[in-house]
Image 1 (cartoon, helix red, strand yellow):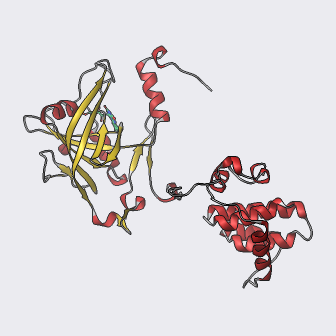
Image 2: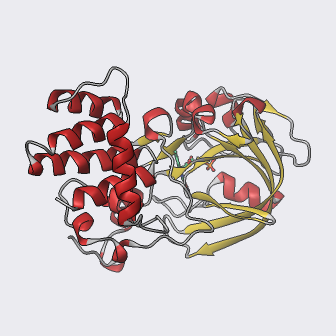
Length: 324
Ligand SMILES: Cc1cc2nc3c(=O)[nH]c(=O)nc-3n(C[C@H](O)[C@H](O)[C@H](O)COP(=O)(O)O)c2cc1C
């Protein structure tokens, strides 16, 4: 490991470390109006939501790194106490990058970026039409930490009204593939929260998993299971009994699946297809000829079941594998 004490580094060095390790950061596209009525539009990735009762969000229009001056967004917020925070989608990411240019305060970044201003219902700053998720906000407070270059000014805001495109909702939830958000990483890197980048983990709410410490040694010591697999095994509330495992294996033995083929080659094909039922059947058959190989195949089967969220199947198969 490398070790750093921030006080022994320059400000840009500290900034680089933070940007690299704290991410991906959501991007707030913040719209404000100056006291002279000029619109301002700027992206901020020192941003997040912190509570929902009332809905509180915060972002940091920090002091400029080069001369410690205050940014236009900070000045506007300080004077008018209102903003609109728009979420940033992949389709607009180049335009928000353009809006981050240090234009003078009299320049309207809606015009520069080509994004479309639309009226808000409660606050004066405009919403961004292209963003499917917009929050009208009032400033609660700004907390400043220092007056040097890149010092934080955390603007804490309450959301007064949400505007959300209807088509984002799938079964009442804003679906990541519909909203297609982007986030900020280190240097010039961004990431897109879409497609293969999205996965689900069942919440452990209301249940108490047995925990890593209670996993049997034959699971912890296996070379097949990954750390994530062990985390998922540990999230189960009870370990199946030997009798349950025996019944399960007997039932599998009695099944007569259609289009089933035995053998190693078939096993690998089922693995590629994520067909863990057939993987188990093939593994059990391989037990007759090669117990060491079959044990590995059984563990690969348990892993595939686990990764398909079939924990019960995974546990029973893993325990069966542990017998060899
Ligand atoms: C994706 C992205 C994220 C940014 N995040 C921040 C941030 O969190 N805080 C900040 O002070 N500047 C941030 N910046 C830089 C500001 O957008 C930039 O300094 C901008 O010119 C300030 O505009 P203003 O003076 O009109 O407020 C970011 C820029 C980009 C492109």
